[in-house]
Image (tube, rainbow, N blue to C red; front, side, top):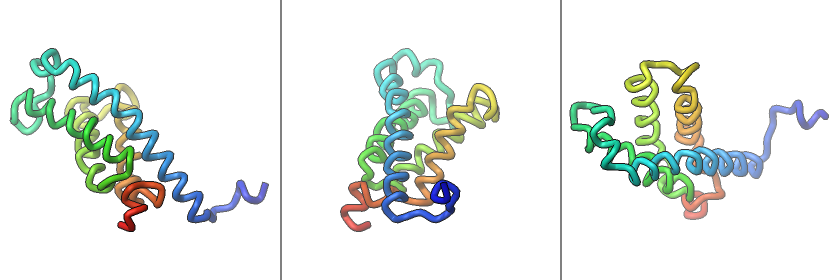
Length: 135
């Protein structure tokens, strides 16, 4: 029981925790990016026009974040760099598209945002391509 109440942790448990967070967050956001890619022609006329770049460009940037960056995060390659577009994407979803409704409709995006921010701060852990390459 005292182990459950402890605030200490081992390097191994930290690495397993970052692995699970990476796999969970990236694995759960990839289907969203794939769906947007698959239905690009449908979404491009109704997508939010972020920064005035046009709807198709905004959609392509979203797909890049949710698919390409999430795949990099999943394997742990360039992990901290990969979290930045994902964080920006979630901020846009929450505060631009969702008008800051983090306790309602955009609750999932807020959870993803927190996961990606934690991974930006902690890094991918040793159980990743970055970790095995010694970065």
